[in-house]
Length: 236
Image 1 (cartoon, rainbow, N blue to C red):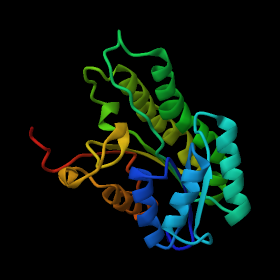
Image 2 (cartoon, rainbow, N blue to C red; image 1 turned 180 degrees about the vertical axis):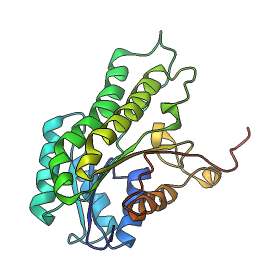
Image 3 (cartoon, rainbow, N blue to C red; image 1 turned 30 degrees about the vertical axis):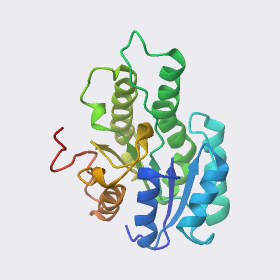
Image 4 (cartoon, helix red, strand yellow; image 1 turned 90 degrees about the horizontal axis):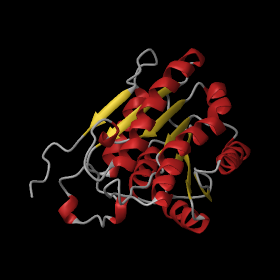
């Protein structure tokens, strides 16, 4: 895929992984729309990334299908095409299953799992038209379960399964579908404060480079599930 002038939509793009990937895609000459639950935060993040001719920021709760439908309509009305969707928005709450609150379970399923369905449902016709790419941001927690992670594991195992099945459904339209499963990333996820002590972690721009590699690979080849982890994990 020649990236210059192509259009990407990144959910959860106001900070962390989504913001870092947006910067890398803009450096490649792409136009990028980012969304977040708070419209003002999205607009501020977009303004910090570049001019309105190449960056669009707006509010969308991926847990609400109508929000994502409106997001895609706004992108198409602005740029007339959609070539890449990165379903990145996610939340995490961690507690033993007997202590995990129902509203936190529901928020993870609504955002992490229902959200990827909503984003794809809203964008699939545009991606058919562009023969585009749909990428979900899952996690190594989508294949490795751990204590206190029942809700998060459930959502991310679901994302991995959803993405792999969607890949089989959509490749007949020349739509590529992949899931990226990172380990520890330096981001604001789960109220983390990225600092120099996060230097050992995967950086958001590293994932941006990975997205670019996926976009540029020969069209006949599809890396459908990518696990990525720090080379030298922090040993506490």
